[in-house]
Length: 372
Image 1 (cartoon, rainbow, N blue to C red):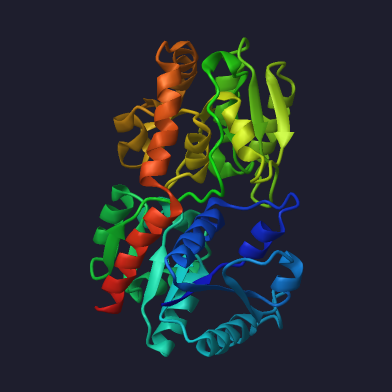
Image 2 (tube, rainbow, N blue to C red):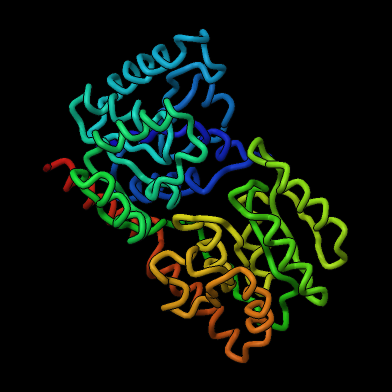
């Protein structure tokens, strides 16, 4: 089967070198690796110059299609759409996949319709499903996104919350739930004992969605605990977040470690007692999978625990409200069963999220769409 993804960030992931990569692109990368391991041909539709920029060769292909500088103002949307259609047609895919609420949801649904192949949409967070995308997408982007979902053959939901919301809003579109994949080469790292760990980790781009002000309040209330924050500012870093970052820099129990490359993240998380997450919303955070891979438990809210996976499987501590998180962090550090919990995290990942396991589920979903 010839599978065509759309993603404009995948060249940056391949390039590395301190480039900020969101969880959506990491998810697609893991799916691509899993699908190729099953014998499928995978390509990413992306921008002109991507191959030279990325330099790294992969088991999948980068297909250059459009000028990322935007083209001629006023007609750039139409020229890009036509270019993407022409390039996709030459590739002759059996199915087209696109991730995250955006203009390109509509564009790729249009491309799939013209090519007479199924279109599959993968939401990147709960906001894509429950309508919160309206808070950050322009009116025109909203309309194209909604057009795309209406004309999608299958939605790959990350959790039951998304499934239910898409059922209500787009009842005619087929849906299945497939949790996020995790790809790793070689062996996973050795799991450190609790007494070898030194700090609590927080990982994310410094944006409004990651709720840095709440992280500040939690960290301030635990002056005896060392926290290490991994991330960097982006174009989505708002003023409230910047103010919180300045406050964090003044705390003696905080260390900023900057952006951490993907080949270093497991070491960073493996030396932490826990990963704590303060996000406003998530679909299925890839940082959770990275923490599980390192044998590191999670502390977060119920709203951020997809399908109660962490709570049901004993992979950390889940609370109802952010103001309960400080007590949960203290509780986790002192938990006499901590080492058993850490081992459970890694075992859960291997059994439930390994990329070829998840890719097999996606393959079955695609076959359902192909036979609609």
